[in-house]
Length: 428
Ligand code: GDP
Ligand code: IMO
Ligand code: MG
Image 1 (tube, rainbow, N blue to C red):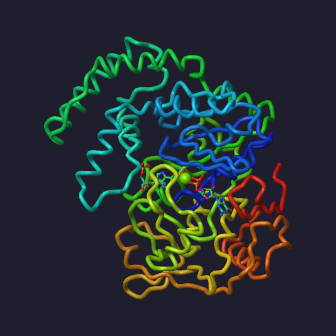
Image 2 (tube, rainbow, N blue to C red; image 1 turned 135 degrees about the vertical axis):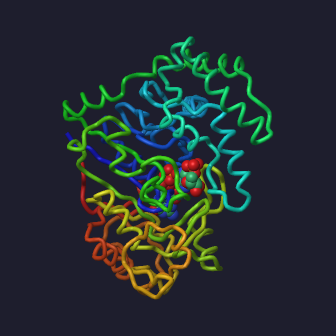
Image 3 (tube, protein in one colour; image 1 turned 90 degrees about the horizontal axis):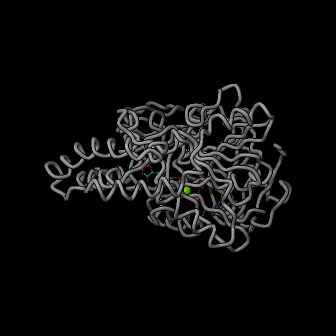
């Protein structure tokens, strides 16, 4: 048996989808364990582009089962849309299942997310407005609606009614917005339940059985550690735990079952949404990286903020996740940029030099990154397939990261397509 966990180490969009796709060819199961359709995971198969929001990226290659586990918040309408999109391309999706325990994103969650962001006027988080935060809030407040409830109309109606009493009052009195109609929501979600009933199962039982049967299981993270509800730049974070630690609670598998902990980082940094970003390049070079790297959000289309690689935050992310295999993506984007800077320390507002990530988000805005400069390279590296195909300076860049973090880079990605990888060690 082998288990693999793929998580993002920066602010999301590191290329987790592409890596999951590559690894899923040999997986018996590919599992999403947190987040929802706020994710945007891009996979290129030849020239064809797939963007997966809620379905595991493994759905394209995995011959086994694709699972949306209990820790995910599910917008069933997005689920149906994605399934239909894949089926319209002739793909079979009978192998995709959702946990009975997963919470359902309801229309009022999406509205709450939207109204709250609008209300903040300048201090907004910059959420994807998919209702992720409000849905997790209801889960923790123990008033949420779960996938299993969609299969029991009586319970479903009761729960929607209870929720609407509170939400409608908020909409009407606080946000001064229209209220929602119980019958409309109820009828729609009962129908959804009927449509999805064969896919709603006890995924934790299936996964634990798979572990006992020595299957290959790949857990695919969405978002990333710097957006983690506990260890990210709170409050500019998402509402889940996109860490390796999140896998156990989010999929119902024991910590002792997790083996290969794969952290994915871009060769530089991007962030979409608001919040501190110490190494941000809010200038021409940042724009150049955005254009070359195609740095526009896969879910919202927003331009991603760009900046230098930040090893202080990466060390924080690899520490919390216990990463034992690193993936560096988009190294090809840095061709032609020299010198390249990498942040290895921060100077605090009172002049102290530190090499750890702070919990004080507000202070981060005043921290100054301290950089090491490395010489760049001019060659197009998108055709490199072995480590020795890389120019010396590209190798030095990779080895600088390895030395700082004390973790080996097992895969270097040099392009968006499935085959554009330098694999230094076979994990399967
Ligand atoms: P995810 O959310 O972590 O799955 O990443 P996204 O799909 O949101 O964003 C990563 C983007 O970079 C996608 O457009 C990928 O096709 C693309 N990509 C992934 N790896 C590479 C790479 O090594 N080089 C280049 N140039 N693009 C890449
Ligand atoms: P993938 O899986 C990048 C960001 C949003 C916002 C914050 C909270 O593609 O890497 P939310 O809607 O989750 O409440 O928004 O988190 N965010 C992401 N940024 N990639 C993602 O997913 C993201 N999912 C959420 O922009 O700043
Ligand atoms: Mg993404």
